[in-house]
Image (cartoon, rainbow, N blue to C red; front, side):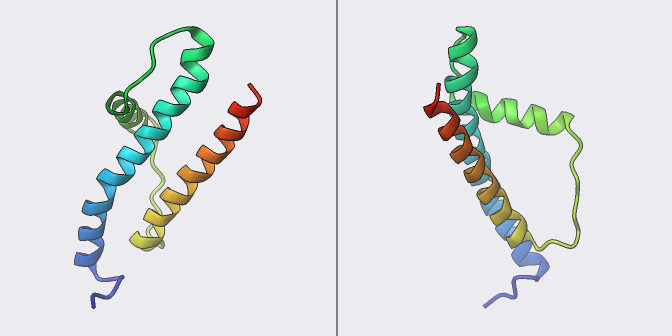
Length: 97
């Protein structure tokens, strides 16, 4: 079994998980766009692909904080947990609209 701190394991895990995280984040952005932006301003909803594109543009414009002390597994899990938490909060807010 590969050591989680092994460089090749981290690279492979990142290559496999990054597209899945992009799709998950894109789906969350498209849901939030439909709930909050499209409904409020009466504009079209975004597809998941369009939401992924918007997310990529935002990531290009906002500075990224690199933390070298985190393991790749921890960073990827943190990304999933953070996105799921944001989705939960957004769902609660949407319930009160």
